[in-house]
Image 1 (spheres, helix red, strand yellow):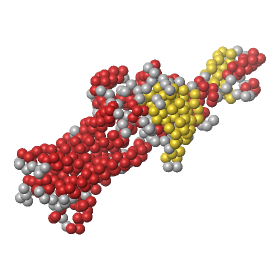
Image 2 (cartoon, chains in turn blue, brown):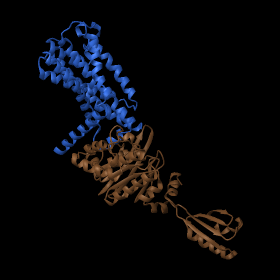
Image 3 (cartoon, each protein chain N blue to C red):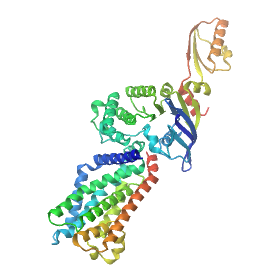
Length: 252
Length: 305
């Protein structure tokens, strides 16, 4: 049993190492992970005379959003096209292990970009109210968004653009309705039902509580719903891929 | 123990039956050929044997482990070169081997030793840092074989391992297959090169329309299918068609002084030809017998004859 677990962790790490080497350690991906959230954040916050902590919660969520879910939608279609998917699945790993390795790589990628932001905040004397809860929410959000990306890649296509299109058409509107760029209290009331359906509403709100001391929803609800979304996305990602992986293999 | 056992494998895609009750056993250390025309169900069968596809009915075992119930245990004992698969194009040969070695749970030291040995064996050692996308097709194929051997498998699945390779690379892979057999490795080979299968395999199964239609050693198949032998006899002068009434039961072709007979019993045909030559005062200059090839067997089976 011990050997089986050791093999499981080794396999997950091997897939994660492969992903980092092949997909994440690339100049354009790194630049996108830095530039996209910062420019979007500046566009909304600059010149408004707000305090740093006002926007830190949003910048953390935005960075996670643009890093943790950026590459995962293309991995499966790309590997189908490259004819590497069947090769890797012929090894002693399951589809689940492969996807967990993908989620781990994406989570690490997201954390690499978020940790410096939190540190810069600390240096500038802007600490989250509870550092332990901040780590928990950042971790949960990173895993959840990575799994969301994996869900999009369950579309049984060998054209990465198909998965990116699906992913972008769902992800981009979420930024504007989740209280990331505009606080929920300032959003039109008719948007509220959509806001409450968005998975990034809750970590953003929770981080606002941690940095500003107030939020739109109770903190326990934020953390519970974030955990539920993460769990649901992870389970759905694994289940959807198990259903579509054979269709994907037959396409090649 | 059988290295591979397929028992009543069935697979349907929509209304199309790809594999329809395929059963066979492969002994340890055997090279087993799996032949069939395009779309016969070869790749679907291999995918079920290697755990990539779940059969609708039936089961497969690898070294006694049911592939769908204990996939990791079964896969730990096997190596696979899937049809038209690629190593990761943006990883070097070395990194591709490191990745696969890790998936088999090998230690770093073990992977390094085995990767070096395999790269040297397959003539890739000098270019191990080159990205797979910059390798030739032959080098990529050899890298895939190396990746399939990193865990010292007991069972090796090779789906078209020499397809599209030049003569030298194809020969290198064939030599390696024979070396592996000497080491007791069981090889399951699918190929379109029928003569290659005939030269390498201990037994061959021919699949058609999802069913195994013939199974046996290459020699057994030739006899079983009744593939014809060609006898070419050259006389010292041209002969006429109406002189050949003694060949009524055989198929033949006459080209002036050369007679080509296609028959199941070559000795009988030769004796009749000699008797005929004596009777009409002809001299026989040459007799050549061509044994039936496995390709002849394959063509007969594929045509449903």
